[in-house]
Length: 191
Image 1 (spheres, rainbow, N blue to C red):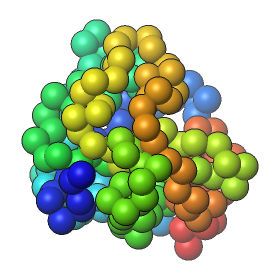
Image 2: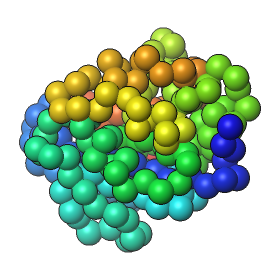
Image 3: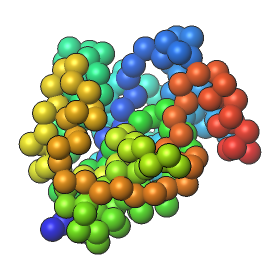
């Protein structure tokens, strides 16, 4: 089994149409003095390579950019597109609209992947209702490459068959920001 000391890359999904937010580029919205995307990139600062799947934007950190083909065909296809640029044996998956995720959460996922036998293929954050947060997870890259990551496949359906374990995280860590109310809440929590 590969351990966190062997190196890891990150794939951050930053596409989508932001319909529930009212359109526009929601991951560019400010939370605590930085864009949502910048906050998520900071959470994976220890990655060997950070791949951002979505339209190219200006970031303060060098990242690898790509988009799924065809564009806007869902998170599973986006993960597949990002995975094509991963070179490390481990990969952390995050959504760019999770502005409160942090390096501690990322390390908890990687640690579970290394130490918990239930996490043979992956370690998935679970929220307070024990719901898997597929885009707050760490995986053996080889296992992800074997998953069915085709266009319009749900991420749950693609990843659930793998051998993954649950990793309880802080309630805010995997909180995504889909609506104006979500944005208000994460801005208050980021103070």
